[in-house]
Length: 321
Image (cartoon, rainbow, N blue to C red; front, side, top):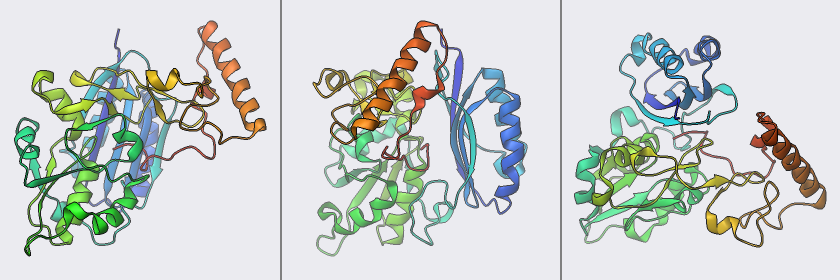
């Protein structure tokens, strides 16, 4: 039974007192048994939280009691298990890190395209479609015909834009560009970046991939694969149903059934993406942690160590999109 409600949210809005919001927001989440990660910055709020429905609704009501967040939107999905281990409210310079001064999504973002209109746009041969997510996310799934910038972090996207052949002017005209991401926040910044560089016709998927998968029937979909999410569900499919991917507990890379069938996969210790990157001491420590996880599962107990984070693990873009 899916009892845990997950809410993904973000809003670009001036919050000059964002540091003062941290403690009361964390207290509200803890008081209502809500877990996840929320990021606060002067430019707004971003994050994903999960808990029982009444707890999530209480936290959302608390956020919306601030007039600046009164129209805060969120996307919902359900999970059978709590997809987070703890609650964190972090202070950041940016709620999603692009690293380009002066890019203001509240003034410069591209044109929203509704999920039901997205297929027609990206099927236009004159539109360059760009997946703004990181490479490990794209490997799980993406839109048919989309370009993969092969970035390791969102802050690498501006450099890719500067050298991408598909984005260069032809006959003095810059191409039309359609951009997408998981929930919409990275597209707010990436399309603002494109407009700051002189691209006039820039579009982005309203509500992101998650809204598309929730809205567009599978038989009409141009989405291929599943959609990576930044929590213990790992991936979701059409209708936002939990997908088939899992995390490698050694490196946190999403792994498929094919990855688990590889000779390089050892539960809790290695996968094809991190095989050969650890010392013997590290492998022994991982193997012991996995043994403790297995024992806890046999006793029907939670094991916080399941969320092992080695120093070499990949780092998502300031958590959730």
